[in-house]
Image (cartoon, rainbow, N blue to C red; front, side, top):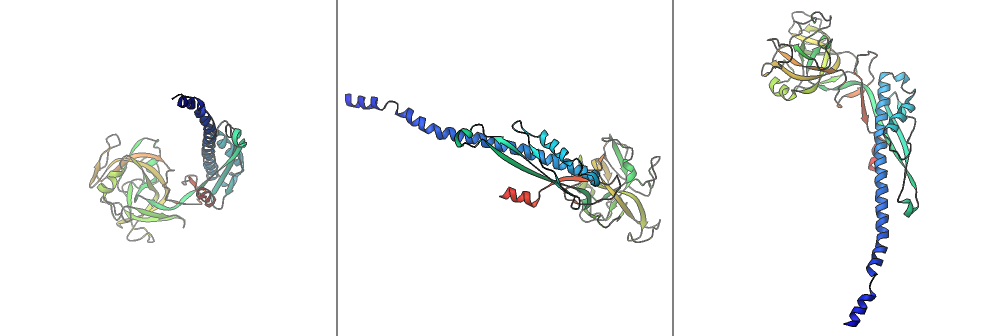
Length: 338
């Protein structure tokens, strides 16, 4: 028994020795994990900065391509700085702008100190890099709801103000006391209540009609409009129309049954109510609805365009719709995969 006790006494401190040796790699792993976490956090903030900078430079180019290169480096640095952590000041490179492709890429880098890992591996800092790209342009192709609004319906309307757009463009060829531009709304010929536009060929005339039931739009008012209540939808805006018999190539005929609409731009419209055959959801907070039919809602602005739209160069008209959105270049995609 005494031998056993003496043997146990001889092993005192062995556990402490094992723990002391084991804690070294554990501390090292913990230090590396902390510093790697800081590295990823700084990388995420740097990515936010270059993304914001790319959108800002693209927006500048959308306003004026001829001057978008001037001051772009300062603008990019400002957005990168605003998203930076406190470790080191990031450096934004001069943005790579292509006015022929309507794209811009912003790259930046910053250093991250290894506060703990440097005690183990001897490496006191690392550089992180980020790249963000955006494009700008006007929509030249895409799909929207096949309902055209007269351009004067939104003139004078404040954001959030309820309006009622009456069916039938002939009765509202001119909006009363507002403008000579047409009002009302009409149906555009389409399939399955979805019309695709291709604006790349210049002026766009689209055949339609103003019947209450949906015309040749492929729309079932109840089934297609009810799910859209209280949502923002994209609406084609026409600035003129002509009555025709069969096609937009014909000369105007005041007695013809169809209309041909000249689509000038697009608008975001929040649908809050209306009355079209089987679709009856009157918004009592909006102006009264005509018995012939109406759509009710709020004009938002001329900017909301679905990402499905193909972008291209627009005209010089200040009212033309401009779109700025993020893109992923091939180099950025390869970096993510790699």
